Length: 311
Image (cartoon, rainbow, N blue to C red):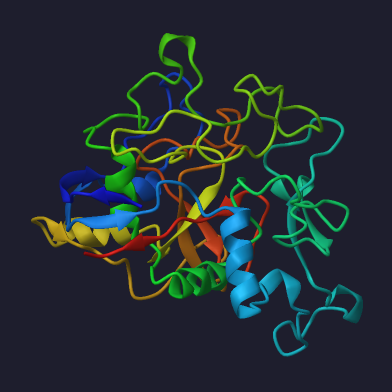
């Protein structure tokens, strides 16, 4: 783990549209930018790996959400054939599709889990140093408790990811590729088409941890590669609520509940950092201060986590 000294910073992000590689999203849920202070804490230098998660499962016998068969009580309207253990997998079509239809490239796959990230025919043998993915929020929490840690708050995560930089677009500065060097694992090529990622940054799909330069706090992969669960509930209006109180928010822990107007019945937690699927054609939420969200019992093959610990 790496010691993060704590301090005060401006949290959130400006509208990136119109900037180089800024994409088309206004990122309105990342505003207003507001002042926040966090105490010092410890944070994992990398995302939790398959090797680490396997030790947890071996020690505890833990079964992840994706490995459990959904029940009729959980999904009363689902057909019986749909009540099978599995998870959501990026499954790009073989030709371009409308970017307004994300279900065209995401599919619930029977047998997908952390052991089989893209489905039952895939394995993690030889991928011990890759981030563990296909973990729901409660899976990440369970690992953190076992390890004597916790998930970071959204404020802690952003403060750490900035590495002491104020107002920068990325954890390393304002240029996507300083000196022509790739600094993160994101998507290059035509999105979302099968074999569309040309791997110009060195990887097609997920990469092992710590293959790109760290930020100033020696944290790896805080932009791209795999999204990371944080402990805050998601609400797009939370920053406005904090800003309305005035002053500096000290160690904020997020709202009391979740609300995503796009799916009001789905409880969601914040995710940070973006993933290997980020591209200015669709999503640039690997930029500092921007936010993601995820339904708490849903894992995917591009979401993982890292852990924190207090003093």
